[in-house]
Image 1: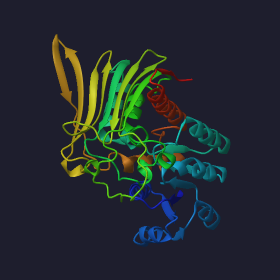
Image 2: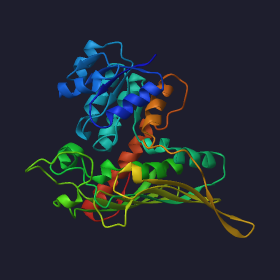
Image 3: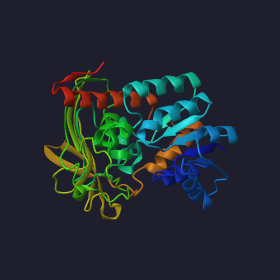
Image 4: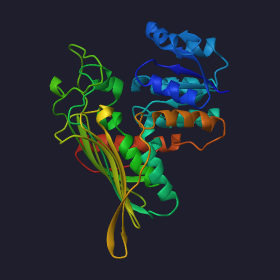
Length: 360
């Protein structure tokens, strides 16, 4: 049985815990700088040991096989590398790091340790995404020429003045917080090597509490709000493929849209989640569609899949355990995470320089 310790008792901890348990893992330890929060999380779950730091957890529970990292973005790299250097497999929340340079260090550490490093890019594990990948892998779609990736929130800023809106801790706004759809698009496209990026960032509404989302993150009076509210970008790849990106916390739109649309040489398609109220899952509608020509007619196929209110989070966490045990291939890799971070770096650099950026 794989033994796992979780670092960080925040909102995503329950998904990691439940996903690991679903795969048969023993989640035996928890660490959080707020020891009271760690104890509260562990109390009604079968978590036997509670610590304040990762170092204490690794020392006190040396039999752990894996570590889950659920912290503000700034701490991903040091915690991931610390766990890898102690010989532990690591599952880390998104985004992978603050930038591509940090991700490169994490990738090197995982190779040196010979351990699995995965990230909670959970939308790859949604039922709709798995269904689309079945069609892609079976040759029904053909080469995907282009795609459009959107995560558009109308009012979805996660608090004001906290770590999400403080660039020194988060690294950025929705460009880093909402990489899911452009990661998913690149996943469908075969994760090609990026070539050029043209990006723009906007900062509207970052001082307006009316645009705060329903996430429960407290505002910090006098805190910092120096990250963007939205990014727009065009990415071209060395394969000739292209990708349009739109990610926002606060931007004028009819409703919250979470989608990837792609144009294949045989078949096009879409996975989409529509929210009636920003980020309230009970109002959501999931769709999975294929677009093709048959006998001279335009045909749209609705692919029926099961509903998953965790949006793949439980399945992704379970996949991490199954990969360690050799029972499944990983839904994502550290090599792909490095490409993702290169694209994000390119968007921010292009937005700052107001010019296209070549990605090396």
